Image (cartoon, rainbow, N blue to C red; front, side, top):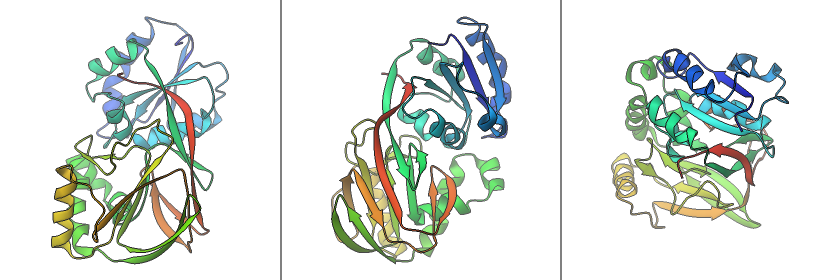
Length: 287
């Protein structure tokens, strides 16, 4: 491990932290090997991955999401250097935004196999969001993120909380049909939001072979914020306002539905099929 390292960079992620971290990462890699290469995330798809046993992602969740499809069910190990706005997967793995702390964790070379989502052939590791969750991720201006960092999503969450609308969804969950009117549906592999401050699942783990499903059924902003407060306080029970489910596979009847997949805007014109690929990617983690 770390005999041959590919370092994938996104120097535009977050507040361009990857630029500041570059020398520190080079010094770290040189302790293990002289065989390494830097590539920009835009060049990654054209890179031959065969020689590399370790891939570092210097960027945010979007950078990680672009790497994941190429290392599913391989022996390659992913190391994340959090440089983005949210860094949700890194937070779930116990990796810090502090470069020195993160490299100390990676140095221990603790490797964990985590589950991966397959969403209409799109591979991802965090979540897919419809409705309110999609609006926050897809419609928060980049200028706001550049100015306020991750707090921009919190600001957008408050704003879009006053624009909640219900939509009818027909879903087949592990073979059972379910119809629901919802203002937000989230399908999560890692259910953490706002770093690890909020989680939308009960006992959600990256390697449990299950997705956590959160269904928000309300449009009144006051009731919405009450429900959100209960989530923050760890009170997550099925009620008339919200529902919490777990599943392995799900199909959603759909016609040109906008969503986000790990923070990337998607317009999916056909039915949405979400499957769990169990323990499909190897990653460095704290534990």
